[in-house]
Amino acid sequence: MAEHFDVIIVGAGMAGNAASYTLAKAGLNVLQIERGEYPGSKNVQGAILYANAVEQIIPGFRDDAPLERHVIEQRMWMLDDRSYVGSHFRSENFNEEKPNRYTIIRAQFDKWFNRQARDAGAMVICETTVLDLIRNDAGKVVGVRCDREGGEVYAEVVILCDGVNALVGQRSGIRSEISPEHAALAVKEMHFLPREVINERFNVRDDEGVVIEALGTVTSGMLGTGFLYTNGESISLGIGCIVSDFVETKIGPAKLLERFKAHPSIAPLIRGSEVKEYAAHLIPEGGYNAVPQLYGAGWLICGDAAHFLNAAHREGSNLALTSGRLAAETIIALKSEGKAMTEANLALYRQKLEESFVLKDLKKYKDLPHTLWRNKQFVTTYPELMAKAAENFFRVDGVDKLTKEKDIVRSFRKARGVLGLVGDAVKVARAWR
Amino acid sequence: MAMSDKIEEKLYQNRYRVDEGCPHVRIDASKVPSEQLKAMVDICPAGCYVEGENGKVEVVPDGCMECGTCRIVCQETGELEWAYPRGGYGILFKFG
Image (cartoon, rainbow over all chains, first blue to last red; front, side, top):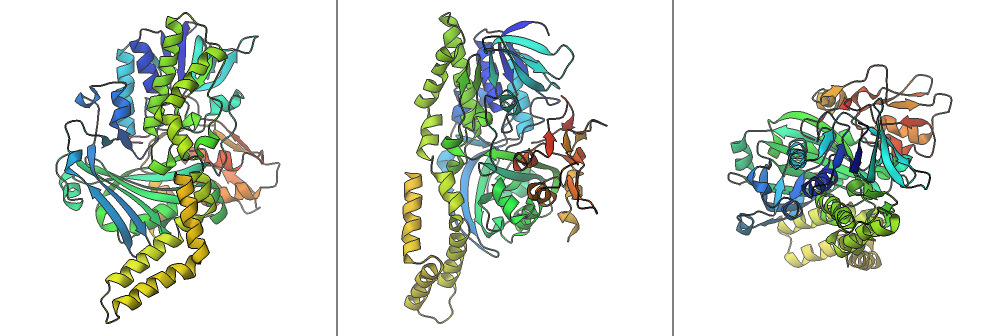
């Protein structure tokens, strides 16, 4: 491996593969290093794929990428222990020729995506963990050190796509540690069911899919959400909460998942399924304020390692794909102009991110993670109140409607106070604006 | 507690290649266990942490899913030595 490459990419997740493919296609000499047995074997996601971000990289990806179902219906549920109040949005428009969102299975998608990068000319080495960055006397990053004998490889520039734990960046001192308030721990199970059973239970045909996002008492007072995504012949079911909340409550995520599965609104949807995998993963939820330095002499950071996740809209893979592509395009532009990979020149990457939805969206919601974390009522009190209010409203029991309405208003006032209600509304409006 | 609540049963579905004799998570046993480390006994999603009879916390990372939760929870206590397993070892997600 004593070769010299144009670019070394650490990791074969969404960001790494996007960068690898884009660079290789442009004819650059690329080495991509992945610690898993195969690309995807260390990667965990819900998982929703946003087509637009992939199309920017591989326009015809739908022809042969492993996609599960395209999403035609989105459900948002607020749960208490025995019921849910929900909104469902379903549209025939999502049955378009080029659908907008898909469910995917990461181990399969990543393997496919990495194959595209390899076919475009990238050299990919698996089962190799990158330990550290190598710098020259001037402090510029010139390569990486791997856990193999003679595992020092050199390149003009290194792109770090090493995920939420971002150990390489941290060991090298270019990134600080992620804090327990800025990370969510999610656990997930894969529930297998025949395709027809899923079609019937979710009222869909063929490759149509449904997404359910749930919040409420299922997270036991912690800031977090549950989710259910339909795949072709399986259901991805999981729940995640902020790590510092787990530490405080000492409620194990495995137990939380069992409770979510047993909820009367969820249990019938997965009845009789065969579970084939249990996964856990951290999600970087700190938003814009947690984004680290994104570039330096000879290096760039993308995806989860750069804290690119929009928690408000449950988006992550599209930010990873786009940042990987923009990092690659930055390097391609510099190379074509014969410019060196200095910190000043690589600042172009930040500029590209500022011009894209990635940093624009993160900036828009920069106060949201903190607001929600400090105001747990948005995921605890309100869902419960909504469920109780709905039950009161719909139960016909001889009580007149005006009294019922007053009871509902009173229950909200009692729980939060008039000032609390107004304050909460302002807080959300501010953080969302 | 129902059988399905048991984490071991969940982990049984997963595929691992364990690096025998090379645990990727180690606890500094010379220190008195911190509250953060003790919390891991309850919240590790793979149930890797157990509290021994002497009040010491022990880790058996064979079922570890490499999420890194213990790493960030205990970052300030300095009790944990945490690295990814050697290339090719550890959890191998079939679906992810």
